[in-house]
Image (cartoon, rainbow, N blue to C red):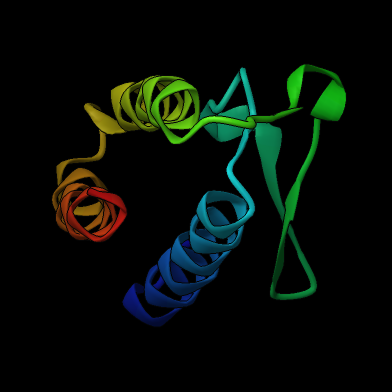
Length: 97
């Protein structure tokens, strides 16, 4: 991912994937950058053994916020991506409540 357009596409897909997980109240458990792979312009989530479907909203939110925090820690060396991702994740957290 080396162009602004490719970064935007990746962030769009990441945001969509996280929204799908949130809608289903599923946390990943190890949400780091290396567990997201791009291939042929598509984003894939891997290392699924720690995924968990939550029955209560509060348990889901705790686990999902940990996933979000873990994911954000990966981008400190890439300030432009970090800025864009942080803005999207803040918006997603607001949507979740």
